[in-house]
Length: 250
Image: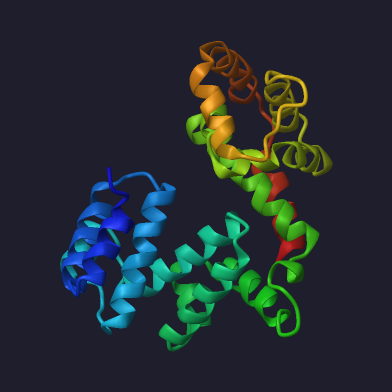
């Protein structure tokens, strides 16, 4: 089965870029979860539309549920943040540049759409990268925020199975220590217990192998559910802890 972006690229290589755009728009509008494939589809849409100097269609704006005019610019910045979370800083930098080129006043635009703090953080990082790698310009707290937020968001939305099936599972031990460092007793404890369910010295460096292991182990998923109950019955204010971390990261 073809990945949507691969199929679109085949059409693009055949000179059928408009058909590729139509196919990708149809694909992303049918999806309700932001997966790696959806992110890649959006990225290809941005590239093709930039190549042909096209805007999003009115139908896309309407069906995507957006109540603002410039879906294109918002998508660019959303992709930028997605790459930041994945720690793919080179693509983050490229999309940030494209976003700033595409928007007449990116600062005002980011304020209007409610992601000014994110824009300020990325701009601050970008401004430091003239003579160094983009990733090197990130502070320790900025990297910590990405890892902690990703764990909290995923476990709250879809549970531990979702987190350990994601690309962020490779940073689980680092994330557990970071959560403990910012003062989280419950979330750090839950992650520590979850890690302990895997075989001793389990190699988390390959998220695909971690996901494959989970698929074969029903027992570990059942234990995940029991551990997750500690979060749902907890009154720990994780949002407050993340907010304090965010203040140091911007």
